[in-house]
Length: 249
Length: 345
Image 1 (tube, each protein chain N blue to C red):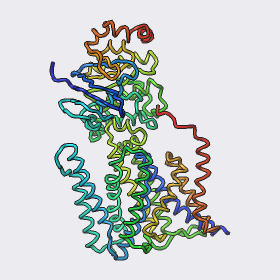
Image 2 (image 1 turned 60 degrees about the vertical axis):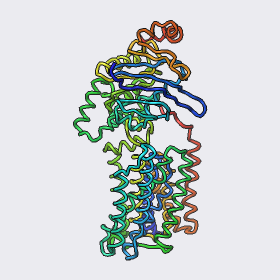
Image 3 (image 1 turned 90 degrees about the vertical axis):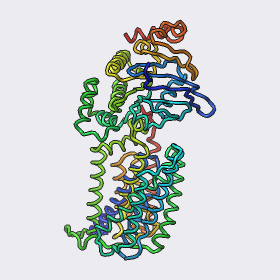
Image 4 (image 1 turned 45 degrees about the vertical axis):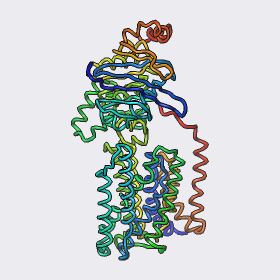
């Protein structure tokens, strides 16, 4: 296997005395979708925040060959890492178009023509956002906001896109749309690190998966194998998972 | 009280109100972007007025030395930060250029007599001194604690204000000063004589407000500053550095403060400590706008200007009391109509 795009080694994060993440190691290869599943409070969001540099951490994060401890968020953005946080972090009182333009802020020295071209390309992926381009982000529906958050992250031309619970709180039809877009992004060569409660859908779209429990990586393996592992089936793909699945399809 | 007096007081109120509006906007801008209540805003006003007066009076201009000291401190702090991060001392270009700039400007203002230079050039030199002063203040005092609780930031703000007032006394002395008006004469409008300085104040304020509006609505950098105010995490995630946003808002605040100082210096006598009470009135305007709305803050500041002007006529010794009492009904109304913090989503 060639050198991975992202390699995280022994990452630890503590909130005061409580260790939220202990010695987590994972890798994301070029063009791969990797998912991290696990129950609420397992430390999934903490993991993404630490990789992005939003939270201070111990351990090594190596991204695109740059190796370091407790990365700085600006460096990560500049190198092409992008995070869509669970809360979306949109610019609520600004228009959809302004949100997108700011998504491409790291290319601010580009000409207006290049920026417009990037916008048009994105609008073809999210036609709904084009209809709503002049609207304030706060007035969008939950699904549209998630689309906007995704689109804003894509404006930064990421090499690695990290998604924190992109389907949380969305209607089943929109959840399907989100996963369709995730699959489409992979075909465009964007690598994705995906965190999901909807384990079944996540395992279906991903190449490789990790199970995070109580701040530790409990299991890992190719997603198709993990989807049939009896422990995973019992804990994450039981009747509840089946129910979600039915809703989503 | 006849119509003529009403017009006269109204004119005074508009002049002062326009200045308070500028300061209110500036306080609001800095607060929304950085959560810092910029108490030293008034020092930008006073220092600008007194620097203008010093140039015109031919007394030594000492503000450059303060800028030089702060730029040197910023250079040391940046080098120290680089040393802690990379394990070696590296002098970065930005702060080094800052020191060179400050040194050059200090030399210019100490060696070249600017008394005969004309108001426009004097104003330009004054702004060239004070805008980078805003930048340096942010770098030295606020950037290291940017993530701290707003209360800590407020305490630091008060400390910086107190220190700056002291430094102001050292630089400018205890005497007040007034500068020459930009132009003579005025404009007769019916039975009222419009003072030329009033016209200057209103025109420059309007131009500045229009410029700020265009900057924040049209340019990507202005939008980035707004974004940093709306959602800090979101801004960081798209690569808008909070440090840059903080520095930019402080530079803008210093620009607005210095312009205000230059504008009012011909109207009122300014002392080294006059800035505080002036910016406090801008602050009351910002509070009326709920520390959130720019248009309401500007209107609130205009109201303060009028209230001040008319209370000078009726009860001049209670002038300040009346002006600051205005804040009470606003606070009561706001606390009654406030329904708790809304969630971000």
